[in-house]
Image 1 (cartoon, rainbow, N blue to C red):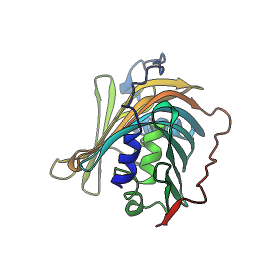
Image 2 (image 1 turned 90 degrees about the vertical axis):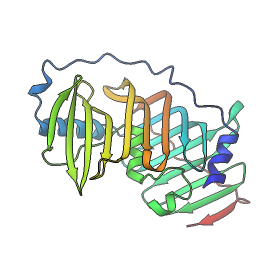
Image 3 (image 1 turned 30 degrees about the vertical axis):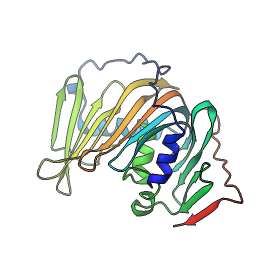
Image 4 (image 1 turned 135 degrees about the horizontal axis):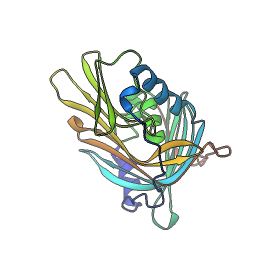
Length: 258
């Protein structure tokens, strides 16, 4: 795994800020206390369901105990399970690509002329990406959508203009902070029974495209593992045209099947 992302990082610039993603105007609810939990859950899910496709450009950065780095990317996404990320270094140098769908993944490094192909699963994905994310979590990170669980929350309060909903799932506490103006989960935490923070996400720099709110910046971190992924969009389009998932692995590339 280190060789892949260290190679990308060696050819990449430091992650840039999402300067062209301006915050859109949003309408504040007259009283968020009037929004029952079931309606909030439905609205968050509806926002995610409205995203059919996304295309964007920006930068991605990762930190981990074994490696750290950043790269520019161009992204095509189709909900719920297709993603193509083309990675670039300085001066537009091709660094490779990562294709992901439910049936397979392909990670290709142009610098090593090497590809890894396999079926997406936590064990196999961990070998080619630097953070322990599932297919669903990767899609959530790039769409900025972290759906609320079904059922009634154990806690439901107003906190700094956001709705904080807390759920207990398999002995862990899942806490969501929802912006009621955009129906986005802007913060999400998972803690174990002892209170240790296992997962944290944040979404910010909210923009609006075709009437759908999306974050211009998303971070996903695993504090106990020392891992963090940050996505910054410099441009982003939602439900515009047909995204391309075309990619090519050179015939002379070294290929590993997992």
